[in-house]
Picture (tube, protein in one colour):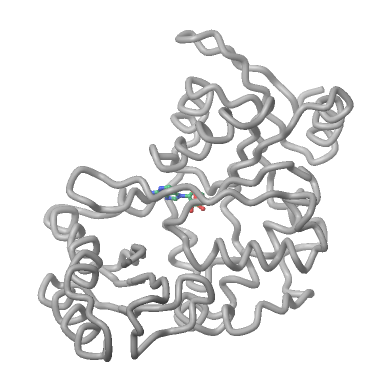
Length: 298
Ligand code: AMP
């Protein structure tokens, strides 16, 4: 069977099996299920960094079997240039997963995820999550995310799903998707903390695209979130949001948004009662690289 092959790491001799088809993967997963082994799943788009590997590590500590997937989902890129430029480092990714002790890697070609082609046939009722913040600035993005994640979840049917808080809104969207699929009692969602570089920049595959001075300036996103946190007061938040936006602009960022929202519902908050849990969220371009970050503020 040429769609399954094994690679053996020289370093720690862990064996990771790579699958390219849903049916081969499904058969393998059934074997684990028959033995009553819990399956943890961390979906990714590759160009892996320590943030991704932290999901793998958490899954390994909570499941007998851990599966990662690498699939750069064409349906979620509202900007085709962004899709074209999305970094790909497959050989290094495989090495990192093997040495991190990943058991299975799913590496599907587009046809495995979209057997009928990449078309928007289905509409997912995501409510306001679909049209605010990331949904507003990347129209269709979350519908595209849902198309790929639904298919991946149907194939894998994990006991535990591992997602990063880095994509705060996406976590909420995927939880909603799991509800829509009627699987909230079967698939348990685990949100893992944001891993950052030493200067605070949230790890992201897109950071590879930062050139020269851009990389040094990129920590301004994290500084902006800290600014929100340190200057937070009960009452109106609109001046604080404006000042934070100016901070980013001074560092040559072009912000899409600087928002403070209810951490449970993601509804924007303009007047804070000092008790509600809130999250600061930013999205901004530096050059043509769009970065996002967030922080729980209280
Ligand atoms: P991506 O490959 O960007 O689609 O990300 C795959 C998963 O890794 C998502 O659940 C992300 O939220 C998560 N992730 C990305 N960056 C980080 C980070 N810096 N720390 C923790 N998790 C992350």
